[in-house]
Length: 309
Length: 316
Image 1: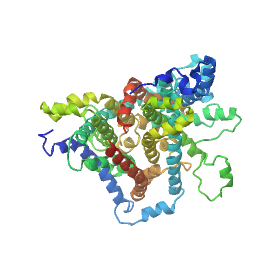
Image 2: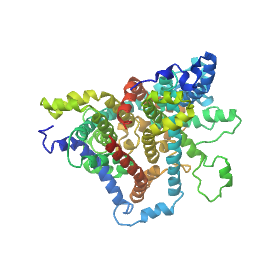
Image 3: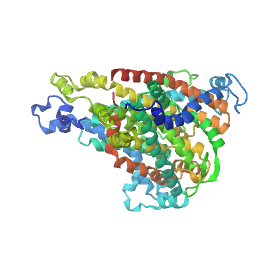
Image 4: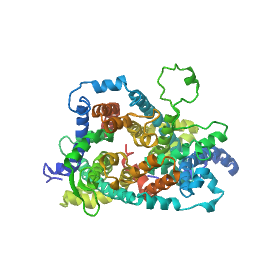
C-alpha cells in the first residue's frame, strides 16, 4: 500500500513482539546468565554448574549422565521409528478405500493428552497378566511377565551380551517402553503431514514410471522419496524437537524414577524440587545447545525456500 | 489438489503393475492381501490402548481389578457408568473440566488473533529487517518451554495482583490466575502460529490485495474482509493444534497455577495418578473425560484440519 506510514508494520507486530520478548527471548538470555550463578542466583560460580553436569557427583539424586544418554535415545529412536512408521502408513493408506477410517485410528492418540496417555499405558503395561494387556499378550506367546516401566535391564540381544559392563546402558527396557508410547502418540502427526505431501506428487509421473516397467520399490525409492524429502525434513525436525523437549510423558509415567530421567525432567527436578536454580539453568542451556544445529538447519532450509520461491 | 488418486481407489494399478491385463478379482485380492493385512493390523494395534481404556472406564471397580478388559466382551451387561459418577461428583473433576475450558478457549482465540496480525505484516508489508525478524521468530520454535519457566515465574510473582477475579475466581493476574495462563499460552503458541499463518497469507494471490488497495481499502479492512475469510482452512487447523496443546498442557499449569481450585484436567488427573496408585476405575474414567472434548473437536473439524496443514506447513 502506498500511503502506509513507516510505523504501521510495527503496530501490527507489536503484540506478538512484546509477548515473544517477555516469554521467550528474555528467559533464554536470563537462563543463560543464571547458569553461571549459584543455587539462589546470587554469587558467581563460573562453570561449576556445568561441571556438575559433566562430573555427575550425585548419581542417586540427579543422574545427569543417564539423563543425557536417555535424551540421545529419545532423539534418535523416537524420531527414526516415528518418521518411518508415518511414511509407511502414509503410502499404505493412500492405496485403500478405507483411507479415512485407517487414518483416524492412527491419528486419535495425537488428540490424547500425555496424562491420559500415561493412564492408558500404565494400564497396558500392568505387571498382573490378568489386567495388563501387554504382559497378557507376552505370556500367552510363551514369554515372561515384565514390569515394563521399572525394568532398567537391557533386552537380551547379542549386543548387550558382548558389551563391557562398564558401558552406560541407555538401552533400558523401561526407556524403550516409554519411547513406544511417544511413537504411538506422534505417528499420526507424521502420517498426516507426509500423506499430504504424497498427494502433491503428480500421478502422471508415477503412471509413466509404471508404464516404463519400474516396480513399486523403485518408484518409492527413486521418485517418491526424493520428491518427499523436504516434507520428511519438516516432520523429522518437528519430531527431533519433540524428542528433545520430552517432559510430560516421562514425568507422568515414571516421574523420572528407575533411571528414566531425561534432561527436561532433571531440569524440572533441580529447579523446582531440589531448588538449585543454577544447575537447573545449566541443564536448560544444555538442552538449548542441542537445539542449535537444528536451528541452523531450519534457517538454512528457510533461506533456500525464500530464494527459490 | 486432487483429493485422491483415482487409480488407487479402484485398487489394481497401485498394488501390482500389470494386473490391469484382466486377471481375476481373486488374484487381485491376493496380491493386495499383504497391504490390507498390514494396514488393518497397524490400525488395530494403534486403537487397542484407547479401546482398552474406553471399555475399562465402563467396568465395575472389582471387575477391573479381577480380570482384563477383554473379558468385558463376555459379560456386556455388567457395564456401568458408576466410575464416571464417582469421578465427576467426588473428585472435583467437573470443576477441573470447567477450568480447562476457561484456560483453553481464550488462549486459543488470542493466539490466532495476535499471530494473524503479525503474519499479515510479515506477508504483505515491507519494513527493514523483515526477513531477519521472521527467521528469529522461526528459531524460537525450538526454545523448550521448561527453559522459560523460571524467569516467567519470577516475573509473575513480582507482577501478581492479589485481588480476586470476579465470576471466574483466582487472582486477577500473576501466579494462580486465569489471565496469567492466557497470556503465557498465547506467547508459547505464537512461533508456530505465526509460521503457519505467514506461509498461508503469503500464498494468497497478489492481485486481490492490489485491487483492494487501489480502491482505497485500509489494511484493517483488507485484513478482516479478505485475508481472514480466505484463510479459514489454515486458521481452523491452527485452532485445533492450539486447542489440543493448551488443553493437554501439564507443565505450564504445574508451574504457574499454585491454587488447586484452578487446576485443569491434566493437573487433576496427574494428582489422581500419584495419590490413587493403581485404582484404575477412577483413572480410566477421568482420562476419558479429558479426551472427550478434544476428540469431538477433532472429528468435527477433521476435514479442515488436514487441508489446513496442507496449505501451510507443507508448502515448498
